[in-house]
Amino acid sequence: MIPYNQATNGMSAKLSSTGGLIATYTGLSDAIPNDYSSYTEEHIIKMYTGGNHGFASENAGFLSQIRTDVINWLNGHK
View 1 (spheres, rainbow, N blue to C red):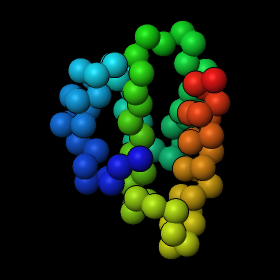
View 2: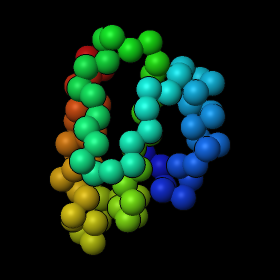
View 3: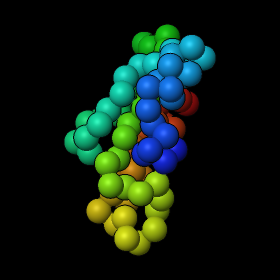
View 4: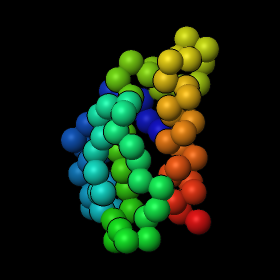
């Protein structure tokens, strides 16, 4: 997880050159895959507009989705 203002083309280029970029998602409803066995790429960027990079209480609207996405991402890499 990185701050939204740093999730730019530079980050996309770096991830693409170091393992490949599966996709860039920009909406809360965009689901992160939970099985990566068919991918040769290693990275995903998901931008949470307004999430303010963190799990603080003022981000409660994003907290549930961020947790779900992190768990899906971890489970997909078993």
